[in-house]
Image (cartoon, rainbow, N blue to C red; front, side, top):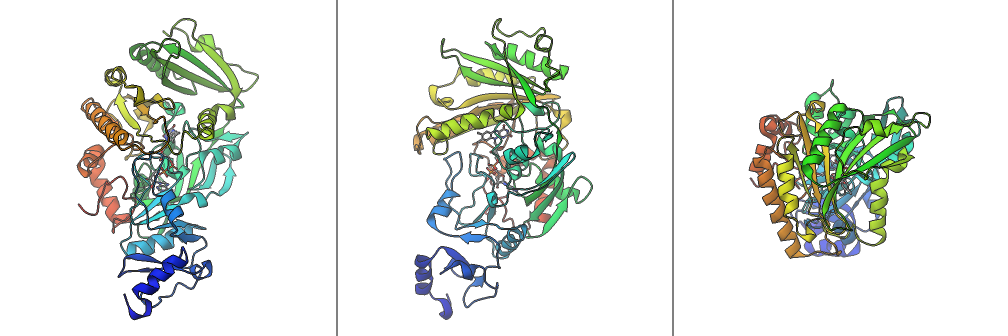
Length: 501
Ligand SMILES: Cc1cc2nc3c(=O)[nH]c(=O)nc-3n(C[C@H](O)[C@H](O)[C@H](O)COP(=O)(O)OP(=O)(O)OC[C@H]3O[C@@H](n4cnc5c(N)ncnc54)[C@H](O)[C@@H]3O)c2cc1C
């Protein structure tokens, strides 16, 4: 440290305030200042530290802000950042990424923090809390322009009653930037592709701190490596996404199956018939018998004048006779089904503080049943938990053109999720170790059966695993990383391009 700002001054400043004025390269530490005014200063150098640029938002180092962004819904990985940016503008994101790149500080964007293995964390780095950028800029016919931190729910509520995104996730309180960095799947995707297929244009802050616009026609390399790119090449600050005409009602039907083989045969039939707006299955323990059963859910969106013919739509299916039920509900209520359940879990403190070691894998049609049967038949009571889910989503691979969304090599594949939730809130080291080992073991089997990882979950991947995961796309991904994030500062959480390797 220099004379102008010695260690004692530094510690005094830390004690006095949590708003940052600069960064000391010597101490590799952020320098707090006495008040926000300084944070909005001139961006000039100051003694022994580099002053942070003038910001529209705020940069925080207080323990509570940092701890909140040093965890995620998994509650398994805890990497506390040294600072949190709540950007007030795209320029804030660009300025701070550039500032960090010049000083080798790692940066992660965080949407809603619902990935479960530290994906949005940056140990000793900067987390950019995208929830402070949530403006819906424009809704036009067939499209919307939104900030990357907006949630799908915010967009849906703004676009209804006339329009809806063509594919929504099951839970819609997820950020648009977050799911576009992963894929974004639900029962609506099987014939239309996942959410990243429905993006028209992105505004991205690259790892150089440069704001770039990209689409299928413009700056294609960036577009292709940001969608499902796990935040490796840039931060999505704005997105132009497709909208389609919305129907006011959803006829949602459920049927019960005793085994995965019969269920899968009917999923296949429904996918190839292509008559439904949504198709997925949920595995549950029957409270009456204690047996594990499958609920097949199909939905048709419609207007009041044209109710779907459920008998026709379910013709020839092999569900347990007498188990077909149908509810005709408003479209928005249908899309909020999972959100309502999560709201209930939050009301009883069984969501944000519970551990969620999630297992999420795509399997080809030819091996889905084998893997699911092996996993489900070996379930321990805490493998799902009282508040967890087991889900299966079909997907036609012909609907996918984005190179980083890695799928098994068959025409029809399925996402199989075991969304484990520990019953009690709080951290339990044995539970974490046990379920991580379980997921790794399950994944080894899935991969040997042609499976690929959906990277929202909890899996210990080495750089070698990632290389294998990206396969033929690896080389292009490495080139894009070098091009758009040459200092390798963006999104260290998944350890795809670790700087210590
Ligand atoms: C209850 C629940 C239900 C879910 N249901 C579904 C579902 O139906 N379908 C589905 O596909 N997924 C589902 N998910 C998983 C979800 O898609 C992922 O957890 C996704 O990462 C969530 O978005 P987020 O805003 O929480 O992102 P975060 O967890 O905050 O971030 C995820 C990753 O994206 C990066 N990132 C975040 N924002 C940006 C940005 N603007 N630009 C670039 N990178 C960014 C982060 O750095 C991180 O690497 C569900 C999750 C939960 C908790």
